[in-house]
Amino acid sequence: MTVAKIAPASPFCTLPERAYQFDAGLDVFAAQSRLILHGEIIAVRLGFKMALEPGYEAQIRPRSSIAKKGITIPNSPGTIDAGYRDEVQVLLQNTRLSKFQVNTGDKIAQMVIKKVPEVGIEIVEPEALPRSMRGTGGFGSSGDYQFWVQCSMAPSYFCIFEKCEYWSKIASICKWSLTPCEQGAH
Image (cartoon, rainbow, N blue to C red; front, side):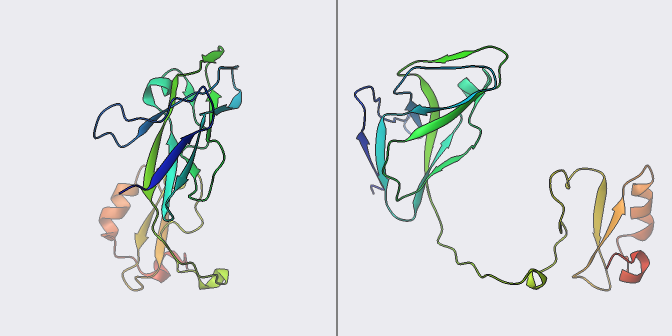
């Protein structure tokens, strides 16, 4: 089944290809030479356009061989939507302390084509969202500073403990059977 049609968009294009028969990703190649200075983010042309069947996307991901040299894709994975028809490009970022040269024909990323499930969304008021263990915890909230325990008397509520040197003793003494009134977290 063909889900992608790929067409050259540059005389310097090397078309995407799999290195090995059953690889998930297709290697993509630079269609231009670019010098990337330390800390710089640049767009590198890949020299091809593509059309994906509805319900599919292409993801542009870093290659480990270039990532270990300090070159990464800052918006990884980059998404190419089914309706996009212009030349595909890759954003590369140099995290090295020195400059990095990209040459025409270099393998610079990999492209994985994936089926995208069709999902529906419902717009609701914030109060209508169900509670969760994570709640409003953002960056770093799953670290080891606190932990949640589901309440035995109100399973839809969770109690939060700040971890300290005695946290494992607290957990074993309480045997995870806290009531909402014991913590007052709700």
